[in-house]
Length: 418
Image 1 (spheres, rainbow, N blue to C red):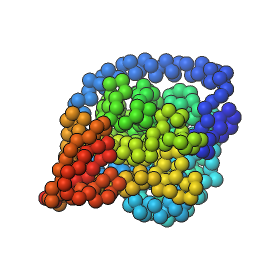
Image 2 (cartoon, rainbow, N blue to C red):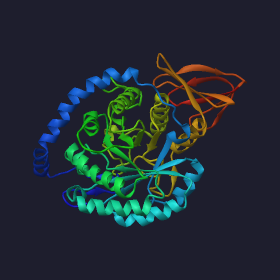
Image 3 (tube, rainbow, N blue to C red):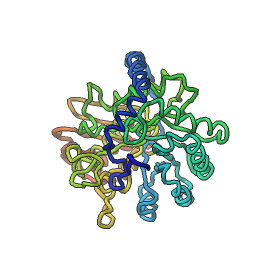
Image 4 (tube, rainbow, N blue to C red):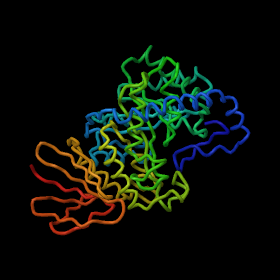
């Protein structure tokens, strides 16, 4: 990255831009694109809202629902061991265009996990946004080296945050067009994802999906964080997580630039008392126990939507927001075991229903031989009796004996044989 942009290795994201005059200058330069974002949204958003109830659910492959972001540079041997232990089927890796020296390292790592389905995020910097020839040359090098290892490439990330380099959707569309043109000409068999808008700022997504650019996406990527609202069941402007996913799905259905595959390529909660490694302020941070429970419930709610292909948890090893803390050796947080348990009980299942009654959530899914009930209450508790015909397990995979228990914010798995 070049000034005034700078990367924070602690939180794995760019620092906030401190040059106010530079930001004002760039915003003014892109003012017509910003106006276009607003105007297009005013037209499309009401239509998408009205169309939400009519969008049918898809059949989601539970084997691929639970994905995991990893860093191939950070603890590579431990990462390989944990991927085997967690038995995940799909992983995500990030690569910054300013760190092209890592391409060979990624290829070497992926040679060791040929059975995994891999998504690669190609992160932008201002140098590559301004220089389309440099962008094309480096994308060509990435595609040539990694296309045999990678299922799909996400072009760009977090396009609605100035510290990541873009100052308008038009800038992103030009950036994506370089990748799209190269793909069509030289690499027709690879898949491209976009536009990777972060948070519930769908006006940027709308502009990226409804425009005159001659591009298309092979799937829609979104960084759908809900951490600033606390628990995943909480509302934002009247929208739950399920509503946000449904609205994204409706927008995709209306657009002619994307197929109907939705990927949440980044989400997590920041963890308390981990500064400077937490990606946000302490105000948004949660305890390790809440982090584990929120993660599981985010996945369960998204699974119930039957509209998300894969959710990539960000990420395996990271002191401020990961399943594993590596500040003083390797320490697996409770979320590590919760992630493993979730994957174990959801894989190979098909979704049946989600029941919500007075704050009591019950998700049902099934295989040919058993029905799994996952129960939780975001607030309070409810008594429940486990009889001898059931097998019950805690959020982290510990067996629970028969008898009276309390359903709380930590999801409980109850298995009934058919």
